[in-house]
Length: 250
Figure 1: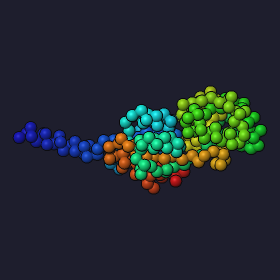
Figure 2: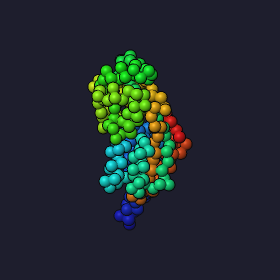
Figure 3: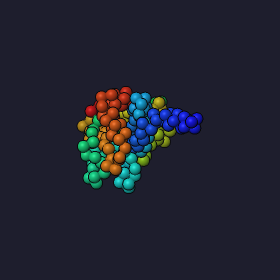
Figure 4: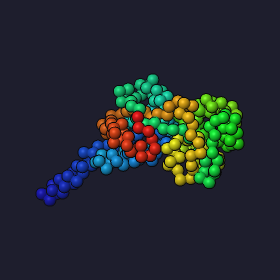
């Protein structure tokens, strides 16, 4: 009798945890670190299992999915890497939603008073070509946006030899934070997340493709918590979390 009662109490205590289900695994662009963790905390506070989040460059995460990596959601910092997965039928098309936007900026260390003259091109090239200029790798969305902006403004050929690359936008930010490069091209939200840098210049929106963040459920996902968390992310309440970190709701 006592043994049966103990077993019943043990099962009763475990019931809430079992009811919550399995935490979803989210692959998220590196620029989302603070905001996505805050969204995961808000979701957990509402009684759901806290998502497990893996942050890296969108290019690296997409390749992980292509290689058969197990996850429930993918959040990219551009459309191209989501398109690449869609072309291979690795996402659920109907679940794809573009829910955030961002801005592209040049950052400098807090003590560096430099101001970036976006125009004329000669003035911009002179400042950036003093180098080194930190940027994300070419396949990484921030790297692609940055190169597109510099090409559009007519300074890429001059600046390119001075570029030092990081494997993600946060790696490029770190180069500036640690003094390895006086300037870096990152997102406005990355600058806001750092206490060591300031925004020295903002690229015109028309100088590069729109910076957008799509989210989608991966085709191999069977965890209902993944879809539930995706719906939260694209909801008004979910977007509000990201807006607090400087993102633009779409």
